[in-house]
Each structure stands twice: as structure tokens, then as C-alpha cells.
Image (cartoon, rainbow, N blue to C red; front, side, top):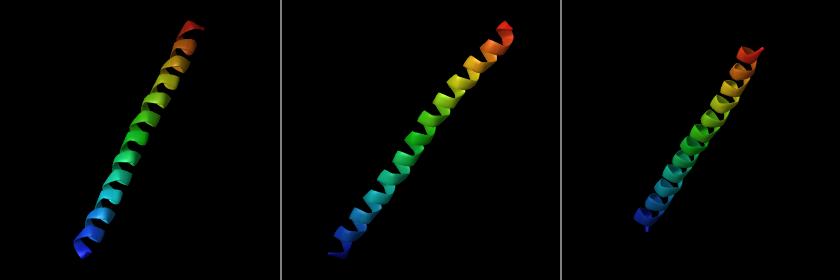
Length: 45
């Protein structure tokens, strides 16, 4: 019984960490694209 609880909690924590990592990468790409667009606008002026 303890093994089942431990494995379940471990999987939930690992899933949460992976979710946070993926969301951070997605946010990073989004802001990087926005910054490139702003830099291109500044260069064109």
C-alpha cells in the first residue's frame, strides 16, 4: 500500500515538473518571437 501511494505521489510530482518545464519553454519562445518583431520594427525606422 505504501509503495502505491509513493509511486502515485512521485508520478504526480514528476508530471508537474515536466508541465512547468514545457510551459516555461513555450513562454520563452513566445517572448523571444515578440522581441524579434519589436527589434525588426526599430530597425525599419
